[in-house]
Image 1 (tube, each protein chain N blue to C red):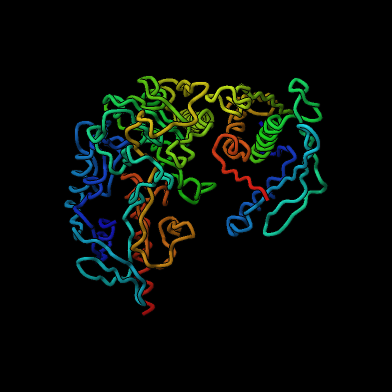
Image 2: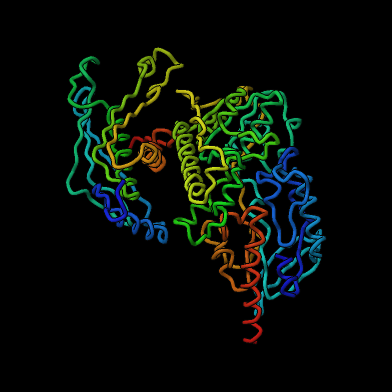
Length: 399
Length: 186
């Protein structure tokens, strides 16, 4: 966005509470890699120029990429500046920070959708003898006491964390709710390549049947595995991870309850994957890729045992830690403008927030299916900076 | 597969459901429903239940007539077998909920159903309810539902109907997830 505003000569400042790429430096586990291949992070005027385009960036490489970009576009970033509130004024907004106040005609909320780990309220009934971590503060298996670990959540974070922890010698039990399975490589090409080429990632928010639901969907169960293997539930059960259903609650005396719906959750996921691959096959056929890509194929169904456990005594000692990989939510506590709905979600139309001169960037399916990807920032920023520019013109002529 | 010009007719008024969903999105208070039943003991393990009124859309509502249910235990349990067992009512509840869901989803997806039948089986170790073995639960060890569906659709699409029905089924949720039950004596 800053790059686009520079291109339009719109005077602006970027406020960052830490260093550039702050949450990449402070809120990611050590071994994390992006689930999108290197070539696929394309920012306006800046893309990957290394020798491993099909590889997946490590956290250090993401930090380097973002920090280099900030330098390359000379983004006017003020680091170590925490926004404490944003309020409306007659001419725009008053932005208060711990380094002083700003008056501005427009505000872009680029604080992301992953500010707070979203943990169920009944987590407070986990016995004190069990350590609790989230995908946000999990770093590596050294943090964990010897013994079993319950990983809750089987989307991208949960499966990666379960895999790493189990391989480190802690037996893992994985609690599985809704998730979307996907092969890493399909017909010889990265799944993200297909989604990009077939236009799936460019799908617009106003072209989708139920955008509210689409925005709540968890990230694809994909991982940036260096060997490009598919890290799905079958891969996990093959190395000995045990499955249980979605965690429904924890009783007063620390007994976890798991849903009996595991089989259907896995069936739903397999069916969704089938539909995505059908869509890709149809596109491939219409666009002449059938000759060059290997033939269509499907992964075997997710294997679920006949009677997965429905409960677990968390105080028994079998589990020494729980890692909640149950998603995130944004923190808008500093936003003192009435733009939130009754569930605390920011009200916007493809990134144009309901308060004039306010814009959003980088949330799930904000404007396009790729909005939450690094690769999605460019197109969204171009659209929204244009809108912002005309907004500034309008209020100028009005005054 | 129903083609673009034909509309599947499974008897479900999807337009009304979609409209209701839109209305309730704007007025969540109206979405608060209460379902009710009353039960009277007759004799032995035989009881007689009625369902007539419920609460929804902000006011008391009534079914077209009072529905009645007799429940009992079989002669094998030294009872009179005057009605199905309570656990069989649960299987009926689950089957009806899933089946209605299949019809609704099929209608919404323009898939013509020709026949849908389900057979259900819940296994139960009586050592639970008879207090013989503390490690055995009172209820079902598991429930198996088998659907036979004849419809104008590919197998994956039929499986998707059944999967989606479970995803949005009230009784499936009640049975597979914990539910608070409070029993008081007046």
